[in-house]
Length: 374
Image (cartoon, rainbow, N blue to C red; front, side, top):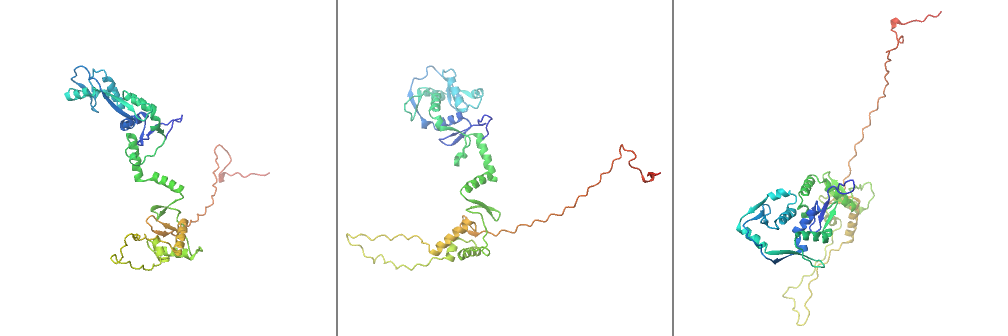
């Protein structure tokens, strides 16, 4: 998360612990809770009251939500208008919201408003030591902030969304950002691979590629074992040779070939049901046949299991998720480095002597002067 110079986040984030939704402002999180989880914290109670006095032939109605606001000259009209704007359309300018309000002269709608005004609505907080009654939604929001906000809405610097919560982000910008990152990871999951590799590495697992195509994870990287040069036991050598000779080799094939399970003697045939004597009166019924015993490995099979365990943990044998086992391939020869071409010694070039501004320093051959000795 990016932060300002004073350490505060550039864009704060808040998480609702009730449904793991992520929000960019605390008021948005509170409005979400009081809309989706209102019954968890408060109970609505309606009591009969007197109907508004006077004759009303029309009422104002919100053109977007359809909520009836009452006649414009009613004493509570302005409060309802501003409350609806703050609760559901706070991001829209108030004048633009007000312009969407329409005057309706439908008798059914006017009658419904009169019936709604014949009841007094109060809200009772749940799971509080002292029961109180709150007169309106403003009092409910104030009570929620004072009582539950610190435990339900918490600021976070980073948060991991799991499952459907990551696909049902209510905030448009966050939802668009998640979808863009998801599309990038579907094309090339670099971040996912990096995260998985770090988690696997912390568990002692290693990444490697088979045939330079598919990435696999194992307890050790492939490490070729040359049985001709490395002294190993006959059991190890037999296992290596058998795996190399057997296509799509598995543990079961190794056991069946190198340490087969001895054939058990045939059990005597059970008597026919009609030949079995019925238990006499008062005698206990014969016990049910015992469940087949678990397979017990022979000493040879246990030795092969230990050898396979050592080979796999050393990287000499690779065991894939589908049960296929292979030996580590012999690494190819490294390309020889070509010797560098000998460098030719550099010959310093003589710089021509400049004659600019000098006299008698240089004369042509036909103008050479021979000194005369007397």
